[in-house]
Length: 55
Image 1: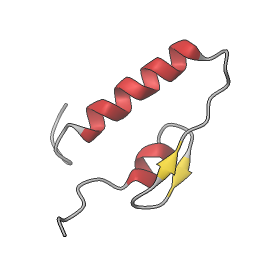
Image 2: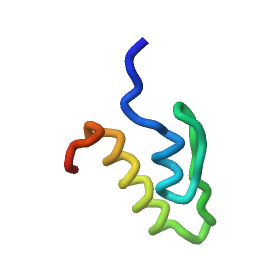
Image 3: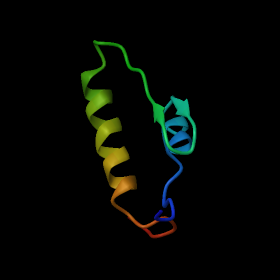
Image 4: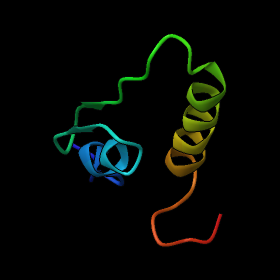
């Protein structure tokens, strides 16, 4: 198996959620669409950037 590059639980915790190394989640209210879009964009950025690299 490939080495994990990201800890999903830590990533989600930084955005108000939580989880474990390979699974996690973030819950937002239905009226928080702008925040949800910003959170999604930030998570995508983190997942597509090498750990330790500057975005």
